[in-house]
Length: 130
Image (cartoon, rainbow, N blue to C red; front, side, top):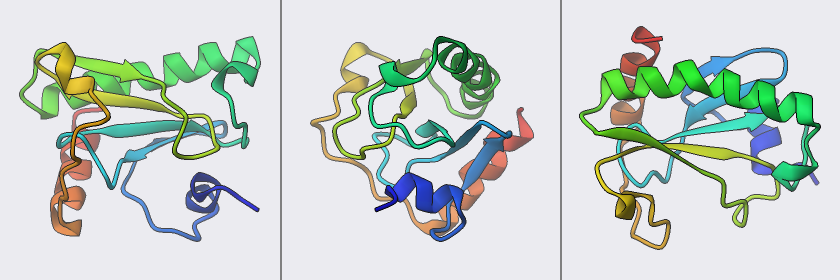
């Protein structure tokens, strides 16, 4: 069965896309730690991020770099943290999260619940800074 991320890639589930190319997709997390939390995924469904080829893993980081810079321009924060957890969805993904302290990357914290309108506005803001 396809992962939820594969279903997003295939357009079966709507998302707030930030950037896309033939190999990768970046979109807003609908269960974010903070506003501006973006997920970057390979389009090829792979469960474990370290099973991605070296070349594709390097390309994934390069793909994420301008997105992280755009998030930083869009959200008041000290840094953009990057985290790979990989426990919730069996599809490799990295989190790009605006942070002001290391604790801001604590994934056991309660997630915020932005409205569809807030997500759409944030996506527009980040895309305008790409």
